[in-house]
Amino acid sequence: MHSVAITGTGVFTPTETITNDELVAAFNAYADLYNTENANEIAAGKLEAKPQSSADFILAASGIERRYVLDKSGVLDPARMYPSLPPRDDDAPSIMADIGVDAARQAIEMAGINAEDIDCILCAASNHERAYPAIAVEIQSLLGAGGFAYDMNVACSSATFGIQSATDMIRAGSVRNALVINPEICSAHLEWRDRDCHFIFGDVATATLLQRDEDATGAHFKVRSTRLATQFSNNIRNNNGFLRRTRDQMDDRRDMQFMQNGRKVFKEVLPLVSKHIATHMDEEKVKAGDLKRLWLHQANKSMNDYIGKRVLGRDPEPGEQPNILQDYANTSSAGSIIAFAQHSDDLTPGDIGLICSFGAGYSVGSVIVERA
Image (tube, rainbow, N blue to C red; front, top):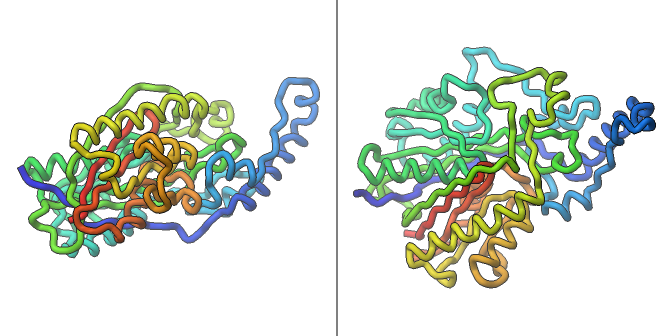
C-alpha cells in the first residue's frame, strides 16, 4: 500500500461578478414585469404575485455578498434571467473542459510535474455539459495526459468522493498520479427567477492533484484518511439532467432546475454531517484540539458555523474555518477545494486539517490531511 499526498491545487475564477445589489435590481425588475403581465390572473387568485427580493435578505439567509459567473448579462436581463452560453461546435472544446483545464494546469504546475505524467483524471461535478463523450476524457486529450479518465457525479460532494476514488487507486498501486477536476457551471442549473434560491450559486472550476507521497517534490499534504456516506433524500433535486427541454417546457416544470426544501435540508443535513465528521475523527484518533483547519462545503454560513461548533465543541476561532462563499457563493463541489487552496499555505508540518463536502443525495465526504 502506498501513502498518498495532495501536491497541487488550482482554481479557475470567471472574470465577471454579480453583487447582491445588482442581482436584486434584476430580480425585482423581473418580478415587476411578471406581476404586470399577469395582473388579471393575480387579481383573480389564479396566480401568486412574485415577491421582491433584497440584498439584506440574501446576506442574512446565506452570508453571500457576490458571486462569479461565466455570463453576467444573461442573468441580469429581467426578460431572460439565465446565462447566455451558446452551444459550441462539436470540434470545439466544451465550456467545462475549458475551465477545468485552466484549473488543472495550475495544479500540475504547483506539483512540479508534466501533464503526460498524469495516470487518471476524474471530472467530478454536480451537472455535466453532456452525457457523453465524458468531459474527463476531453480534458485528458486537451492536457495531453496519459492513462484514463471518467466523469462522476455526487452533487456537492463530488470533489471529496473523487478524492477518495483517486486516493484508493494510488494506495492500491494502479496509478501514481491522479487529477480530480470540478468544473461547476452552477449558474446554468439555477432558477434565477425564484426568490428563495436565486442568489445561491456561482461558477468556478477547481483541481486537486494527488500523488504517491514518495513522489512529492514540494510542499504538500499527506492524505491520512477518507470517509464517504450517502442517504437518499428528495429535499435537494434537479430533474433536468441530460434530458434537456426548452425553456418554455421548463417553465411548466419547476423541478427541471435546482430546487430544495431548505428547512428540511438544514434540519437533516447538519446532524448527518456533524456525526460523520465526529465518527471519522474518532476512528482516526484525531481529537478536536488536534484540528488546525476545517475546510467545509461552502453552502451557507449558518450551516458552516453550526458544523464548526459541533465538531470543535466551541465557536471556531478566526481562520480555523475559512469561508469563501461571501465572494464565490455556493459553487457546489468546488467550494471546499477553493477554501483549501486559498487557506492552507500557512499551516506548518504536522498540522492536521479536514476537508468536508456535503449535499444532495444526501451525501457527505471527508478527507483528513496532514501538512508534510
